[in-house]
Image 1 (cartoon, rainbow over the protein chains, first blue to last red):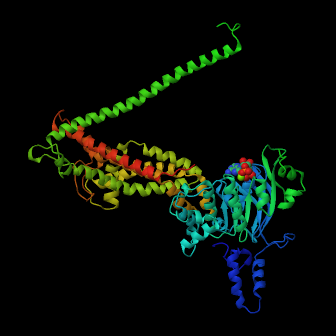
Image 2 (image 1 turned 135 degrees about the vertical axis):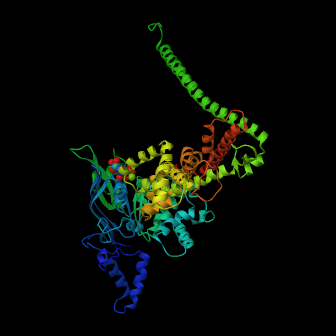
Length: 316
Length: 317
Ligand SMILES: Nc1ncnc2c1ncn2[C@@H]1O[C@H](COP(=O)(O)OP(=O)(O)OP(=O)(O)O)[C@@H](O)[C@H]1O
Ligand SMILES: [Mg+2]
C-alpha cells in the first residue's frame, strides 16, 4: 500500500476490508475508555470524507461526482454523479453504447490501460480521490476487483488461476487454503475440487465465469465490479451467479452492469439508468445518467419518462 | 438470344448459367496455377532429396557409417592415411557455434520481444519492428565481415584482451547470435501481441503490475509461439554458412576452447563445393553426405518444434 498508508493523515487511508475492520475493532477493546462498538463505528466514519451525502441510509463507499471520460476527442460519458453504499448491489442499466462499461472501468482505474482515455471529475472511494496523483492504480485494483463480460481465465490450471491474485499481491498464508476458500465463495469448489490441476480452458463457460469470480474474490477485495457477467451464460449458470451475488453481498459491495432487466430487478438494491444523448453541434453520442434510485422505484415508479420507456421495453 | 420471346424465368436462368460458367472457368484456371506452384515446390524438394540420397548411398558404399558417424577426425580432402571421414567435428562445430550464438540471442531476443510487446509505446514499436525485420533479412556476408574485421580484432582482442586467433569460433558464434536475435525478437513479439487483451485486463484487474502481467500471463500464454521463435532462430544458426566460413576458419575442431578455428557442416559444404574437386569422386560425395546430414538435423529440429508447439498451443476462442 505504498501511496495510501503514507502518512498519519486518516483521509489518505483506505480502510481495511470489513473482516479486518472487525479485528482492529477488537484490538481497541483494550482501551477501556472507548466502547468497542463506538470505536469501530468511529474508525469507519473518520475514513469517510464528505459527510454531506445526507439521504443515503447506508455508509457510502464510492462517491462519484461529475465523472466524464474522453476517448481521444470523443466524450463517452459526462456528468455522472453516483454514490454506492457499503454491502449494496448497484445495477447500471441502459442501451448499448451509453457508457456503462466506461463508467464501471473508472471505478478501478481500468481506463488507464486504454491509450487515449481521459477521466475527469472525482471518484471518491472511502474519502480518497482515486485519481489523485499519489494513488497507485495497481493498489486500487487490489481492493476493487473486476469480472468481465466474457470469461477470461488464464491458460493455466484452475488452481493457478485462483492463486494468481494472491501471489501477485503477496498474500500471506497457506495458498491451498486461500484457493479453497475462494472457490467455495465462488460456488465452484464441489465441482472442481478433484481437478484443480486441470487447465481452466477445459471448463464450461459458466464454470469459467464462476472461476473468474472466485479468482477475483481470492484477494479479498472490498468491491466487485461486474460487467455483464452473465451475458454469455445460460439461464442455469446465470441463476447460480445471481445466488452467488446474494451471498457475496453479505461482505462486499457489488456494482453490476446488465442488459437484463429482470436480473437488475432481482439482484440489485439500487439501479442507475444511463442513456445516450446526441450533442447538437457534434455527431458523437455521450452517455449520461437519467435516473438513480432504489431498484423498486426505478422499475415500478420511475420519475423520468425515458426510464419508464426503457424498463418497460418501449425504448427505441 | 431473343430477349423478347423468353419469359422472365428463362432469362434469369440464362443469366445465372452464363455468369456461373465464366466464373468457374476463371476459378479452375487459378486452381490449376496454384496446383502447379505447389507441385513445383514439392518436385524441387523431392529432386534435392533424391540427389542427396544417391550420392549418400554411394558414399556409404565406400566408407562405413560407423567411421562417418563416430569418427572424430574430419579430413576428407587429404589423401592416403591422412584421409578420415569422421563427421563429429563438423557436428560439434555446428552445434557449439549455434550454442554460443543462442547464448546471446535468446536473452536479447526475448527481452527485446517483451519490451516491444508489453512496454514500448506504440510509436516506438512501429519504428523498431521494421528495423528488426530489416536486420533479420540482411545478407549474412555483412555479418561475416563484421565478425572478421571488427569483432575479432577490436572487441575480442583490444577491448576484452582475449587472445583469439584470426579465425575463431567465438567471434563467429557471437555474430551468429546477433544475426538471429532479430528473428527471435520479431517472432516472439508477434506471439506475445497475439495474446488476447482480455487476459491482460484480467490480470491487471487482480492488482498485477505491468511486469507481472508480462511475465506471468502474457509470456506463458504465448509460450508456443515463443518456442517456435527459438527453434526458428536455432535452425537459422545451424544452417548459417557465410559467417562461419569467413570468421570461424576452415579447420574442423572438437575443442571446447572457442578462441580457435571451427568448421560447421554448412561452411564445409560451401568451402568444398567452391573448390575444384572432380565429380564422381569420394571427396565430391562428401559434400552431399554432409548436406544430407544437415538436412536431417534441420528436419529433426522442425519435427521437434511442431511437436512442442502443438503441445503448448493454447486455444483462445
Ligand atoms: N476503448 C475505446 N476506445 C474508444 N472508444 C471507446 C472505447 N470503449 C468504448 N468506447 C466508446 O465509448 C462509448 C461507450 O462505450 P461503452 O462500452 O462504455 O458502452 P456500454 O454502455 O458498456 O455498451 P454495451 O452495453 O454495448 O456494453 C461508445 O460510444 C464506444 O464507442
Ligand atoms: Mg459494456
